[in-house]
Length: 438
Image 1 (tube, rainbow, N blue to C red):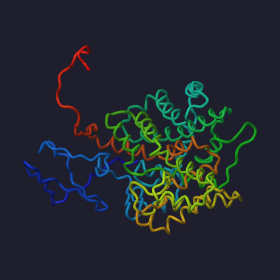
Image 2 (image 1 turned 90 degrees about the vertical axis):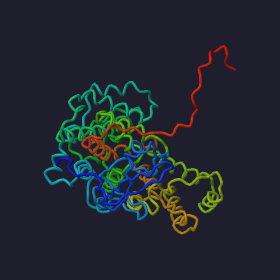
Image 3 (image 1 turned 45 degrees about the horizontal axis):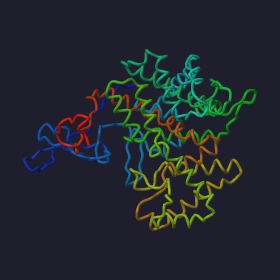
Image 4 (image 1 turned 180 degrees about the vertical axis):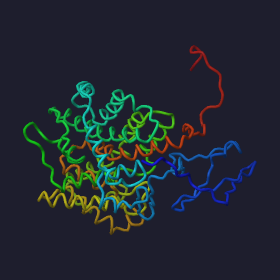
């Protein structure tokens, strides 16, 4: 695997001049490879005493990265320069994982070697497997996933201090393979069913479905269409720039924390309903519509009028056009239900919602298009994956992106991330003894 060797964003000859009440400061303009323009404020405080305030980091570039490019206005998503549509059409999830982590598509021998590593590391240490016995039956799979990733690091102390890219790829293979096993074991634990060990003869996605749904003396046989749908789900969730969980990886990793700890922290960040749990909210919404007995048109009108009913799965923090991932997953959902030979009422509701949204001026003016969460939950539900596992599935898919960003942060050797704040609390005041307080 090639060493990280490319530089940061270039500095243009022009500068931006910031006029402050007591000073003028010249700030370098940096331009990315896709002609994205940014104002470098890294020296603003030292030169002027001022900081910038951008609550929620909505307009702040926290790093320079080569991994992912998004043009939200045009609905463009590229991994390492490759359009997501081409990768979805031609690649396997493990191939995309190598691309994200290493920077280039794998050769035939690299792809074979990486697949062999994933197979080699798919088993959990038996001591680690017994950790599952300490969780209550109704423990949330995301809690188990984060805990078990940290626990797994105890069994691989040689990978806690990575010094070169060869060891990093070994750590990446261990994480990607064992996370899949941990997720399946967590599901079996929650169902009170015996654990099913991985089968080294199966591919990455087919093996996961085997561990999830096989029972003693009856191995689960996933159809090619189902394996394809799972592959697309994982591939399309593999990376998405500086979202909450990815930023968490870089923040934690900047302290020098190891890869396992940084990824475990990202799992916790992903857990929130505003991030990895969004497709769960979509499913709840579709069920509410179904249970209400109202038509989809009536529900949409209620949402437009400011009624308490909120439509989930429309619009995106970044995309102001159609989410390209949603287009791909919609076709995967159609193919999956066509093969199953039965209609899903929730899919029918989702399709009707989409049809209304794409032709309603209210949605068009506000650029509220269906996003990736709109269809991902429907696909997972069709596979038989329960709702409390949806975010775990997201984590399995996002693992390569998290690892890639940890690696990029590691090689950049930047200072520890330490945002500033604008203090708005009380000014200095003296301590009051308890008997004098009122």
